[in-house]
Image (tube, rainbow, N blue to C red; front, side, top):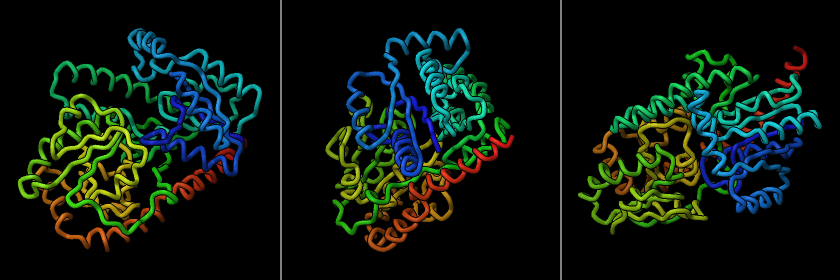
Length: 399
């Protein structure tokens, strides 16, 4: 197959979140197919990332979108009633680039990554080309959950306004042949709303070559939370754990240390630092941070999808405590290996249970690692999607 991937950010380096997802998808699809990527570039420093990407054999072209241009674009949001996130990525140059690429070459599949790229579906010159969009998460569902935790009335008013615009805008996915989401919760939510009748589950995977079980001795009483810190659910989870759960743990385990690991922590997160709370910021070796930790925590209270912070930890055999919402997108085969808690008291008790029972890590988590390696292997997951796309191309051409 010849595949063109359209993504709003260069997926390199593939550290967290949506970058990690699309990076693995592109890399594995490229093994059997001819894949080209077109992406925005917002900073000249990103050219280095582009070159690193090309070294891995990925053909990538870029369209410049300065921060100033994006800020000016936001005015469109109020004029056209578009979601801010969509207007931010509006570009005539990108539209022209996609039109030129699809006019010169006959692609079998155009793979749109994240709903902000949906606006470029009109730029595809060939109407018979299979168009798929990987939403990853249902953005309107995420904002609906987020609003339940907002207390500031002005913020609540603003995000409700954006949420309603996104709910209306999500109808654009009807322009695509297939929609991918990474969680059955997101799929069922969108199906219930009737926005598309072909929404396929494409769950997040794990790189088995990097994240695999290792017998190791962690630092005693070390707790870790990982994630991209500007992401609202992560920021809320960190503050919630530090202020409402961690003090309960310290009452019984005074030597416990909470490590907050992830890029771009806000001033509010940095202010949490103390003798028992360490904010690392960006780290180049996330695997090491997991292995050094006795417990991985995911006290996420809103959001969507299947978090990498859980799959990575489980693959390495790190005991994990999470809220029920955090793990709602996982299958029962994976859920059974995660300790769940939805109140500060229950959460603290589960963490302390792991501290006091080393067999959870040395015995139970080996089984968890094997299950994750089998069920959430990126190569297998993308291979299934590869076959699906081939089948859909045949159906599309017969129509």
